[in-house]
Length: 217
Length: 235
Image 1 (cartoon, rainbow over the protein chains, first blue to last red):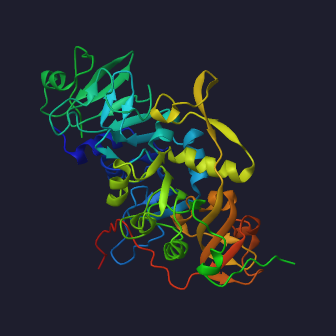
Image 2 (image 1 turned 90 degrees about the vertical axis):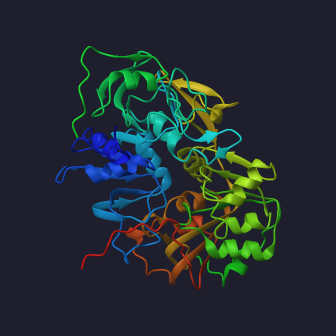
Image 3 (image 1 turned 90 degrees about the horizontal axis):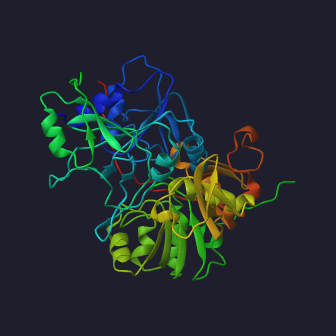
């Protein structure tokens, strides 16, 4: 079973040189820590920076320089700042090659829910709806089940949707799965996790090929 | 000759504000918020405000200060997760809330300032956000119609400004400020440093002064950090 850092490490393997990448809050943010040195990749944060760098050294933090999670950050050489309309022009205009975000639920036709639990939690969608409506390459990073042990990979989402038929790949603590033709397709299993465990934890339709390789981290 | 937009302070800049007005307030989280204008709105005690702002501050800073005094009737935002009082007022029905996707919020402000009454966007199709909105397909993909937003007053915060109202923002404190500056009937800019017209390089200005009606230099910005994340300093 993967830790949150391992999920991020596995997703980092998907990132190619020359890509602009938007990372959501939570596990997705960790992906930046596992990009190989020398790979030409720039991180976009939708509050208005391309070329986001690591957290600042203690004592150098700047209230005017934050990411979309409101964390203090730094800017890499070649970074640029812009306004929110320009930021979402990059996103809707498909200038960003990869979006990684978290989710509460994902369905087997690629729907995603991650912004609201009616009556309990209403934080808002932030930029998630714009991101999932436009990005061509969306990877969801999340735990396979919720805190109650219920599957988060469902035949249909039960929570209010963030976007429809948009998620292509899901990386969880148990597996890598692709979404196509209305089903989850098992691509890889986490080290030490059996196909049966993944089947038990997946409520939506799951296609299992003859051979399911173990992830390499 | 440059048109002078300078006013003395936040009090003078807020002349004409009335209860029931629609306001825009720049900022993302607590970054780049017009903190002097918010303090003045609190002092004036105007009520029934409709506030268009990406976030709602935290309990004791930013728009949270106006929520404490029940001065806001309705919020139009994209993310409001950092404010307990906000959540309480929303769930109890005291506060009307319109949550809209962040990119749509930015574009609706930009459209309002640019004379574009509405536009189609893919964001929110198939979700609650699309309810009651016109849907049209372009290139085989469904889009929803979103309308422009404008405001009686827009409050923005910039790093530097000149007496003609030209503005320069710093780093990610730019965020929603430029679009909101465009969409205000009266736009009030508060800046950390106010210089005479002619001192800013015209090549480097982000918001042209035509969008700004009043400008003043704030005497001390708190610029509170919401999530202080650091790594150890190198020896």
